[in-house]
Each structure stands twice: as C-alpha cells, then as structure tokens.
Image (tube, rainbow, N blue to C red; front, side, top):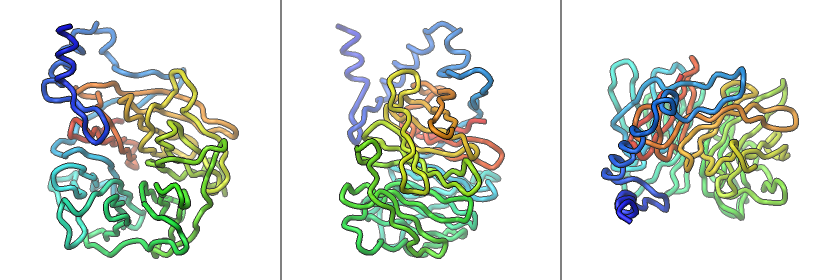
Length: 334
C-alpha cells in the first residue's frame, strides 16, 4: 500500500500524457540503480545479429520540454523546438554554445505553439505552429520570411509534421485534419507542388501523422514514411500516395506504442521514436516489408535514458539527436 501511495504522488498529467514529478524522478532513479549491474551495462538495447545500434554520447542541456530537433546543412547549428516557457525555436551554435531564438513577429508565447522543425539543404528553416495552423519560414540568418501557403481547395489545413527531401529540396507537410489530405508537398520556392489524396492504408485512415521522413530505397523511387500515431503504426507510402505497407503495429518486441519522430539513416534504414516506451526503434525497409533491427533507450533520467522522447534528427557524420522531452534535454547518440 505504501508503494502505491508513493507512485501516485510521483506522477502528474501533462497535456494528456503522464510525466514524473521531481520526487518521481528521484524514486525512478533509486529503483533503476537498485537493478543488477548486468542489466545496466547497456540499458534498453535489443539488436539483431550483425547490426550495431548507436550508443549514448552526450546531453545538450537547458531546453524546456523540447519537442523536435533539426540540424543546419553544415551541422554547425542545432534547431530545437521548445514546448515550454518561451515556446519558440532555439538555435544552438555547437562551436561556442551560444543560442538565438526564432519566433514569428508580433507573437508572444501564448499566441504561438511550435511543434516541428526541418532545415533544407539551402539553409531555410521550416517550423510548424499548431496554434496558428501555419508553417513559418526563416532564412539562414534567422529572419522570418513568412509562411507556406494554405493549399487551395483543401477543406481543412492543420500542419503537423514537416521534413525536407534531400534529393531536390521539396518540403513535405502532414495534415492532422481528418477531412483534409494527409500530405502536401511544396517546391523550394514555397509554392504548392502536390496535394496527395487522403491515405487509408488497410482501410484505416491515418490519424495524427506526427512524424515524417522521405527516403529513396531505389533509384527513382520516393518513399514517404509517416508515424500514424493514434493508430500505433508507421506507414510507408510510395510516391506519397500508394500505401506500400505498415510496421510497428504487430505485438511483440518490435511493437511501437506511440510513434513520433522519424529520421532516415540511409536510403533503406530509419529510426522511429517510441514516445510511450521511452525508446528508439531501428528498421530496414525492404521491397515488401520493414524489418525490425533494434531498440535503444529505456525510461529514466540518467545518460542514455529517456522520458517521453519526441523528435529526432541525424547529422552528416552519423550522430543522432533526440529530444528527451520530460528531461528537458537533447541527447546525442553515435
């Protein structure tokens, strides 16, 4: 009975999710430290033979409820979406640790809600704002350049996730509105390129597609991979409109409880954040399926442990950046 009372005072509800209070973090730390050392040597790693998962490298501290992360083309700057306090995007200079803020003009924290960020090869920055229902555009000097246009003829437009195709620079934005298209692509000049049809893989429409990556497993092939969060699956769509297959929705070690951010490691391999399992899953995309490779991370507050991770990005040298939301930090793995 005493344990139950302690646990009940160790958690709070934050935005519909469960978060640990400071007391809860101390309790969890004590519990984890009491586990056998053989379990703690490499926490939270499951891997198939021949595949080496990334390992924890360092923490980037001082972010409030970070939700998403992206890197500049030269890996010099890290862009972090903050869900708490200022509710803006912080640009961290990895050379000297200096930080600058990106926020749309004439807004205050209560009038904006950044959720996702992506950086194009030309240095342009795209930020989804869930309160204003727009995608803000910034140049590489942090100047606000307006917003992407609302696609004409779309019944409802609620931008949710954003990514940039490294092959060509097109911007892809998912739509949270159930009565609108699932996906819209924009050209590098900001004009609407394609409004894709509403996707219903396995006769089940996507619900809250909160992560997206564009991959090219074969020459001339474009595969858009999206986190279908409310359906607890990841959907791979050929050329943005033909569902190929889903993954992460089969019970077992590969099951994803709440898929969020996605990042491509190479043309046929990606990482998917599992927010409620406090981990990151690795996958190889094959012709007819996705093959589960590994799971890294475990719940906690120590190095390499996560509490409700959300966004993920990859540097050109292979480093992986993950927003560790409830620990107020960005983790770096390599």
